[in-house]
Length: 403
Image 1: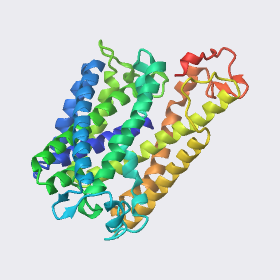
Image 2: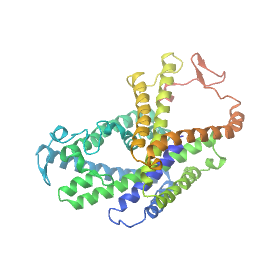
Image 3: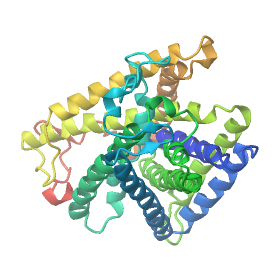
């Protein structure tokens, strides 16, 4: 399911790159951009983990630098209550404009902002990669807590801070679908060149996310291959330690992004909503596993980690409830989005997509079950029970093994 998550996310990111390129070349076909972008990140991932890290480092530098510039400019404009076009910036915009930070006019209902959470969920996809990358860290027990805390801080400053300034600089009605809000702000300020720079950074950001997806799925597929739940082909590694077979398999799926973009101009929206389901399932699984893990820790079955999630169990319960709410919001907003059934993208993704994915997973399990049974000696139950190891020869867990 995590592989499906990133496969769909990659298609959405590739589609986004195609839309961003049209900022300069409106007539350039998005499916062509998909192929070019895929070729670039595929080469980077096949080279080595070092090449992946180098790309991500410079992509992060570009993204962080752009956001810091915007935050600095935005603070000066908002605190100084400067004019942007015919509008005056200021924190008062949060409540003085129609809807303020909670738009409910001009076609929006009061519940409008809480009906678009699938897009928000998609934007935060990949934060779980801190744990995926832990397998290749020299000292995960030390590095994972640092990385998790850094991610939380950056979300607070870069994501929430940027949105706060955007809403304070212009009324929400000024921001239109298909145009980056950053580009809109700089355009209203007469700095079109800065808008173009931001557009370029957005392309780098989408490529970075796509790059991360290939990195993650190659390793996930190899893990599935080791567990006999994926074809043996996925076990193949390059001399530099790259699981190239899994990366190539994911890239083949990404090619469907080119086909989707050739068939419909709404490729990004379709891929985004479908990918959101994968993100929701991934996070839901993490919450459920967290509840079970902490239960075993509290019973003394597994030693406690030095870096435990706060607020147990309520933080996990609230997280699960939020994910259920997002699925319901997707279905409702999707039903309201179009008078035509096949135009109700979100509704179709939820009502048809979830049962379809469930059926495919069930079919897949039926196919691989005999190999998994043979590989595990029919040990399909959990390794740990409330009383300790389920199987007599299960190795005890040391605290350091649970960073």
